[in-house]
Length: 364
Ligand SMILES: Cc1ncc(COP(=O)(O)O)c(C=O)c1O
Image (cartoon, rainbow, N blue to C red; front, side, top):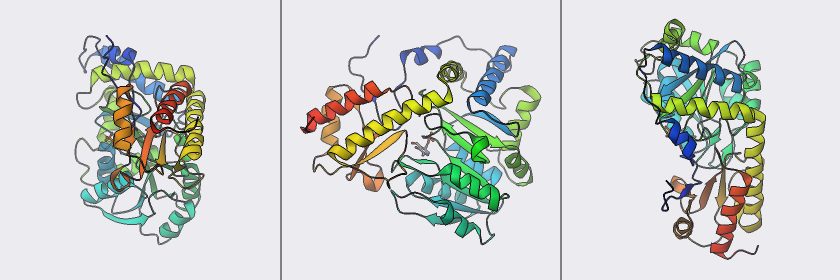
């Protein structure tokens, strides 16, 4: 049934979820120790391998959690003693704090919000030889900045092969084309409520063999955060060690079929088209917040030069059944964000931008 009050979500997560995906979750439950579950879960793992074109030295898992669990997994299972946390926004700052909260030493490579973290900045810091792990956010949802993760991966593989490269791509993965084997990263993760266009509740984590070997050497990995247990259990039983969100796994299974049909390239191109259109629109009427050349493919952060309130804009948009996002934290008033991810298409984005033009009286 259509909910006439529903506002279609263009916030940078959770994004809009189709009725089809919501329906997938209503299938009868199965036991998580039954063969039927094994079949479902092994199928999902295989589809994830295929979609991300993983080479043999990578493994993938699905945790019943939001993406933030993976901050703690990195802090507990990957960092031995010292991490360098690259920060250029709210989420990357949170990643560093989480690792510190796991009892590890964390130094910051602080970059101004809105600017990107560049490989040479990292190389400069890692040159001290102090660090065993690097944390970075690929797609800083708070600022709409996309860090050059392929270049960073290439540099680290060449110059710092023993430093674990751990990446939060919670709002980028799938929409942006991220092939872990090509990036050469060690841990990369995302949540289902972003570009997978599913409800929140699952996180997808991709891990290199090197990272798993590292985890075996790290003490006090906890339980839910123990990467070794997670993968050893899968190898033995082809199931998850703890009770998973089975309903959401049904939906993920279906989502992966659709993604494989569209192909990683196709999904990326659709997201890029939405991002480019939104950026051009923002530059025509307002301005962009991120450093030029480093704009996200899944969320556009617009500098609000209109002098008008984003809260009032969202109230008007709500009457038209849409919802965008204000700026994050200290950028609340200065910016607003449009999340063009998941199942959104260019036509849908054009429509919402036309509504904003109409509400704010922009020239068409
Ligand atoms: C870049 C980034 N990291 C981390 C998070 C937190 O993810 P979750 O709410 O799935 O734990 C978000 C959520 O918006 C995010 O965008």
